[in-house]
Image (cartoon, rainbow, N blue to C red; front, side, top):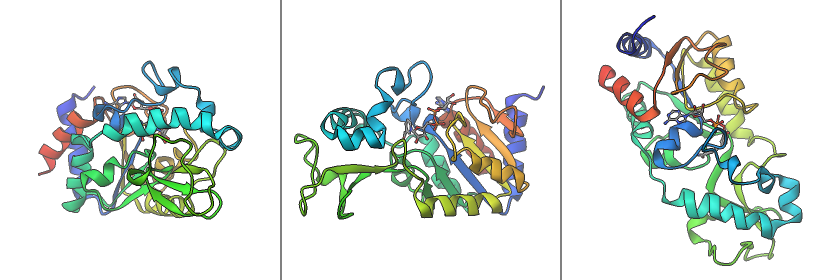
Length: 248
Ligand code: NAD
């Protein structure tokens, strides 16, 4: 079995010669920024009922849904800052070693770290949208003391601009993510269980198109035994930092 150093060197060489590399990120990349994942021992679904993010439930119980949404996404997420893993991906992009980040995360941390080409497969919590007129609001301009927040034009309840259970993937993010996966020669999966579809088809599409799959996760996932070529078993920030040291 290869040790971590030789796996990192192998991954580094493959990234250096790749003409098109994408990263596919999940909740695990933001764990070291203080945002827990949904699943697992400390996952958010051990504390909250996922029903609050069901579109049908939200439409009928917006005040109750908003109580939890505010706590999870606007009291809690709002404090989070990008960590070294987000920063390394931004550095790789500015050094032409990474072409795009496809993220399942809704926390905006890739943009805050400086990444430019980010496809947000599940939307972004920093924006809110009126379900009636489509007006988009910046979360920083919303008074979360009064919930549910409402549209100033028509008084309709605002919904966070990330997808709820029962909603489709935003069209452009979907198209751009799969187009990037088709072109990818390398796909770096960071901190994702691979249990959420259709997002998990992005790295699977890359694999089918011939990409080498590098996975960074302290645990094994359903990707590890099915599509992963190189598993860098470790936390995102430390592992990506080591990879960066090899690359620069
Ligand atoms: P998940 O919650 O299903 O799994 C998280 C994965 O991260 C696990 O495989 C775990 O082993 C790994 N992990 C934990 N700590 C890590 C670390 N320090 N470094 C690297 N990996 C680590 O996450 P998912 O597959 O992204 O699916 C959950 C869905 O929930 C996503 O689609 C996303 O939309 C949403 N979500 C987003 C956020 C966010 O925006 N930060 C947070 C929670 C959930």
